[in-house]
Length: 373
Image 1 (tube, helix red, strand yellow):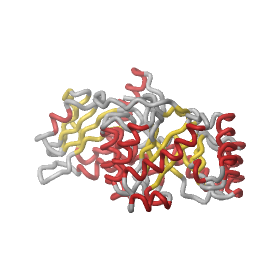
Image 2: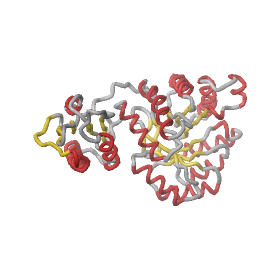
Image 3: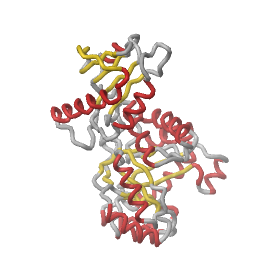
Image 4: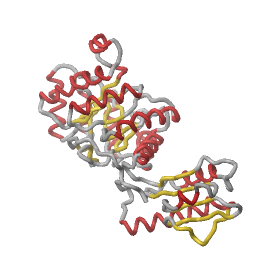
C-alpha cells in the first residue's frame, strides 16, 4: 500500500557506475565504503559481501598505495558489485586501478599534479568508460580558498568543486558526479543547493563524518532529507562511525520515509504506553531482525491498543491491533476473523508476513533486488 512520492527530482545527466545508473531519474543509489585494510583481501571481500547482502549498490574502497592497488585487483575479481576506488594525489594509482577494472574513480583532478598527469587519468577514464567522482570536503579545502573565506562556507565548497569541474570541462569529459560534504548540516545543505544550480551532472549526497550510529543517522536524515525533499541528489552515502552495513540500512530508511524508494518492510509501530496489551517494542525489534532478508515493499503496522490500531491497520498490508490476550489481525486493510495470541506474536506474524511477501512477489513479479516506488 505504498504511495507514490510527491517529490520532483532535479534533472541531471546520466552516468553509469558499473551496471548501476546514476542521475537522469535513475533510482537514487545507496552506497557505503569499506573500513577494512584494503590489503587484507579476505576481510575486505567479506565486508563488501555483507554490504551487498543488505542492499548496497555501490561500494567505495580506499586505495592509498600501490600495494593496495594490487589488492584491489584481487578484490575486484571476487565481487560483483560496482567498486569505486578512493584515491588522493597519486595519479599512478588511478591508472593502475583503471587497468584492473575499477567502476569509478574518486579523485579530484586538481590535486594530482600537472596537466599532463590529469590528462593521463582523464583519457584513461574516457577510453575505459570510467566515471569520476569529484569529492570536496569542508575539512580539506585548498589553502587559498580557506584564506579567502576565512572559514568553510557553502560558497567556499562550491568554488573548490568548480575548480575541478572546470578542469574536466576543458578536457571535454562530462562523465562525472560531484559531492560537497561537510559535517555541519547547514553547511552541506547550502553547498549542495548552490551546486545544484551550477552543474547538470549527478550529485552524490552525504553529511561527512556525521558521528556514531545514533547521532550520525539523525544528522544524515536531517541533512539529506532536506535535500532529497527538494529533489536534489542522485546517490547517497550515510557516513557513520559504525559498521558499514548500518549505513546501507539507514540510507534506505531515509529514502523509504520520503517514499522515494520502496525496499523491504515499512514497520509502523507505536512507541507504546500503559495501554499496550503486548510487548510492542520487543515484537517490532524481533521482527525487524528476523525479516531483514525480505526486500518486498510492504507496510506492516504493529499497534499496542485499539486507539490508533484499527486506523493504521486499515491502510497497511498487514496490521496488528492490541487487545487483551488475543490481538486483532488485519490483512490488506480488512479485519480478519482470526485473532493472534499475544504470547506468540513474533512467530505468528513472521509466518504471515512471509506469506504475504510471497504473494506480492508473485502477483507483481517483483524481482529479488528491489522495486522503485
